[in-house]
Image (cartoon, rainbow, N blue to C red; front, side):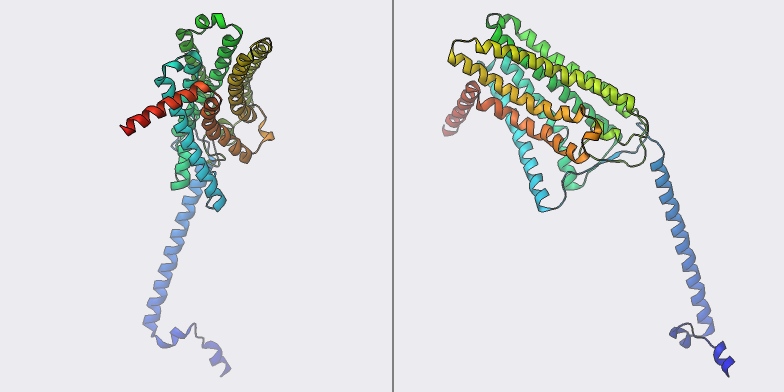
Length: 369
């Protein structure tokens, strides 16, 4: 009796109410289901392994794999506020620099070498801030954080091209101030229209050479592992962290180019303004001294705002700053400085404010009519 009860076993309550043929059919169906699940699991395991293996293999410009940029902001209220501020500052930068270019073009009194160079600075700022900020805005609003290898190279090239051109142009603007204050009688001949065009062309050529060298050398490295760039745009230091090769030699080249593009212009600007200060202190006219100091202080403010963050990013070793700090500093010179440039040059410049009042007056008269 005990053995009878021992042999009898019920798998589930369902088995008490089905016949043997039905039970066999169910067991066959369960077996086929288990086999299909096992096959599908093995398939996805193989896919996952292939993706992982593709990520481990080195890849470069010949590959179709791209990068993923890191967004500056998340969905928290404070980040939404900061994002809104960045959008507003970018809009003001575009409007302010465009207005500066228009004022200098429209007012005949501003057709001088200093204002011609200032219009070129505003022109560079319009494109410099537009290389990175629209992509960052689109990435936050629509999740478009991926960027192709070619797109990353193009963004890196134009960023370094426009940034280096602006560095060189600021140095040449210091020379313009030096000639105007220290050699006023020779100013028309030394700063002719042809000379101004050559200065602008030199800044553009120098910027393009710097960008071509650095972009070509950065993109020739093999990349492997993570495709995520710890930055909101493609910048050389952030890309070098993803390279699976020794970048020590290239980092030395990067330091040398930083010296040429950053430290040499800073030394040139410092020397120019030391001579300017000596000339201003010898002036007997209080009004002339105040005007010279006002013009020079505006230019020096712009120089410090632009050069300072760039020296921090490109001249200091990577161990001295983190990706989070790089993001904050990059926002400063890609968004904030281009917005402040036209404000700094216009608030303390009576000629620019006078031209602005003329344009506003003409618009008011036209609107009234």
